[in-house]
Image (tube, rainbow, N blue to C red; front, side, top):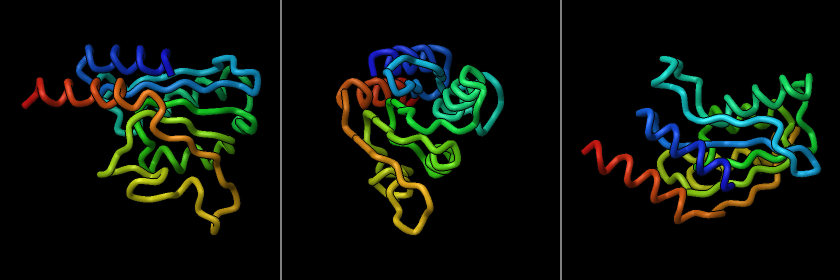
Length: 143
């Protein structure tokens, strides 16, 4: 989570919403990382999770990320939860809960939906204060 928080801070410093993510393999080695790049790249899909999943798939030369863990500073949205499911990620660890758009237990619980063919282990609230503070400070400075 420490690396994800550092990536989130970089995103915020560059004017993107401060969210960072890393993907680790089964041994805990980081195989992909990302931060929000929507503003920087004018890309609505450039959420930190998507950037990190793409990077991990390139490194592992495989779209199937079974056995990997996604660590992200903010609870994934619907789009990112869908990408996690498509990539077959085994576990998601996140910092701040997102009551407005969260799809890992807050607003929706897509990652653990029993109707879907793949379910993900979810652990939320890890370093929650640090992740929430980055977001609160970012939006406070813009209001």
